[in-house]
Amino acid sequence: MQRFVFHVDLDQFIAAVEVLRHPELAGTPVVVGGDGDPMKRGVVSTASYEARAFGIRSGIPLRTAFKKCPDAVFLAVDADHYMAASRDVMTTLRSFPAVVQVAGWDEAFMEVLTDGPERLARDVQRAVLERTRLWCSIGVGDNKLRAKIASDMAKPQGVFRLTAANWRDVMDDLPPRALWGVGPKSQKRLEGLGIKTVRQLATADQALMTNAFGPSNGVWIRRLASGEDRNPVVDEPHRPKSRGRERTFQRDLIDRDEIRHEVSTLAREVAADMSDDDDQRPGLRVVVKVRFAPFITKTHGAPLREPTMDPAAIEAAASAALERFDLDRPVRLLGVKVELVAPN
Image (cartoon, helix red, strand yellow):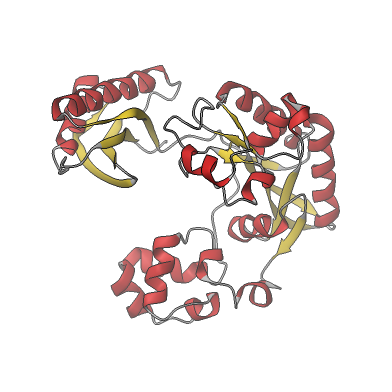
């Protein structure tokens, strides 16, 4: 038997969970975000496939989603309900002889030994569907990177294999954005270097990549194009790299003292969340996010003098990060994130 890695990705997870609660919504455009009122400020958490057909995607403003599809059903986020559904899925995955690494609410990696990976993947799909009534797509790979990319190609409700054997046939002519880890900004920068395909990225001059992305990122991005990934699948609990909170305001904030007050409040809320964590890991750096009207987002960070969970120190670092912004425009959203010490 051979070693394979599965990436199990639940299809339209949050929307699908909501449709299970509201069967009458099956087949209709469903958008989940904020408190479910598209006339209020907030962003889309997820959208059903029917809503995505109108161009609605995660992260866009709810008001924009309403303009794209006024007939969509808008629902409030219910995190506790989604977490319960996620636990059922992960319990199902652990019923198989596999190492299971939870990667989020709606995704996990499985390391398996099998001589029929597609057959086993279909068995996993069936088990998840029977227990939770939720569909998943499964990418089959020989490492985590290839499995993750393959699950995107399997959507919806499919199974797709991507290994070293067919990597070039499948990936060579695709844009670098198809690689897990290459976002829109990196894609644009690569296009500026004349690199428009995965094949071109795999053979790009290393000095060119280093100059454009830095010594470590340049090497890493180029290596992605070959499908290399040595990260193991581990069954340790998911431990976040940071803790954060955001708040969208229904009216723009203009007064600087009010903005400072809101950032201080968020910082103390994050510190309280850190104290409530079972992890009890201190923070190293505080990052403040400001979204200006209409929809321009900027971030600045400030280091903590020493690793700490002290609310006063976190608040002071957040205030220092805020001072780096030019608060010359109305503010619609504020966020504070604390980057945590790496787990042992």
